[in-house]
Image (cartoon, rainbow over all chains, first blue to last red):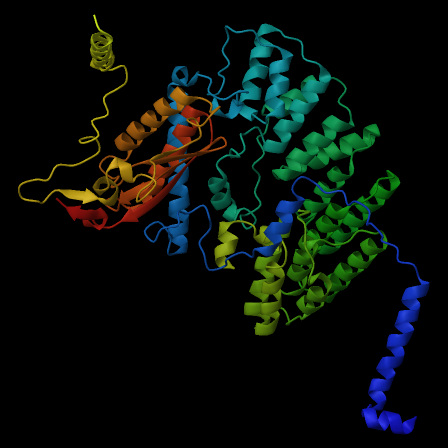
Length: 424
Length: 166
């Protein structure tokens, strides 16, 4: 045998191969082949588009696609970006103005079915019939000024309004402080206007004695929903004293408010109570009363607590409390969002305090993840993180990691607005 | 009368009939030798763009259409409306972008979207141009009740679009 192999010049390796080949043939004979058809995967209407989209990456060197792709029309600086976008927006506003001036010219119907957005706005006058449905429609479309107008007309004409409509009207007014929000179609204006929002001084902007409070009075025997709406509106626009009063009022009446009310009160606790110690006890009390009301705290509760903690100076105690809060909430199954981390960064990395490397620990937690927006403040995270890398830690590697996270998946949506983008 | 004579008279009759047939035009005169062509000037200093330099029979060979839509295909919708709207858009653009368009105004329709393309002179600042873009897009959208977009390119000099002088 050996001699034959040596004649054929087969090595040990070849022999092994021959052996496995033989075994394979034998297996083929014994196992009868079965073709398994995979189960059908249900796909959404846009899945193929998404798959195609995932193959194309964003061109980071190009200008945003809202600008014309032409050397003359591409902005060359941040100022240019702003002016061009705003110029286009003001052109659009001019078109809106012309349509508002000559509504009779735009009454033709090209599109079938008709598209409401292309028609001029409806103007409510005293001569027409006003019903509750008009008010409902205006509330649904978030037309605050229109809704107020209709409400006044209803009152003049003595149209009866049901309490449900009144409450939803109150909620609308409290959310927007009785003003029209910047219209959604002018996104540029929003994008460029919100710049200063987070940084501007928290001052009272709630309209005292305005129509919201009037409606609150007209609702006889206001329930917890009405109270919740008004308190949240007041805390949002920093009418803190009245909000606290109303809160105590409702507690005396034994109403169970929703969790968001507690959150908003915690958020403004630094205005209600001056001293750090007193403030922390106050928060603890509030958390206890949440427990008593058998409500479940949520992510925004965590963020509210962290926010007030981040405003409590640089004592060691604050840092410990921050970490304790995080673990406590984690035990309850509430995962911190980017906003929470933003507050943690604020609490740990103060301008005059000692250098803290907490950002590294945070990065370990959040790296390589696609983050969804869960809180308005989420958009502040990247700006602050980069700022800390630059000014607080002066660490290039960490900055690169933060940048990588920003460009991971859809995280770039969390950059916030133009102002934050340009600073970043 | 011989058969020959009858044959001849029949032939004449048919010739006569042919003449009467062609005496009256029922379709528009095409003027193929004139339409879409430019006459040479004595000094040969009349500027032509590439689009102007090519006569209509070069469409789809050397140049392409100015209006892109499917209204003239079989079963196409809104034939007359499309033509009138295109005229409206051209007049609107000429008036709003006064003296700025250096090329023909190309109108492309896809689904419910209208895209208007052309070459614009850089004689106004880019900021003003963005204002006009926003205004035109929005107002034409209101008027035509479908999304309208501009796709512009700019040239710094009028001579940039000149193909030849005749």
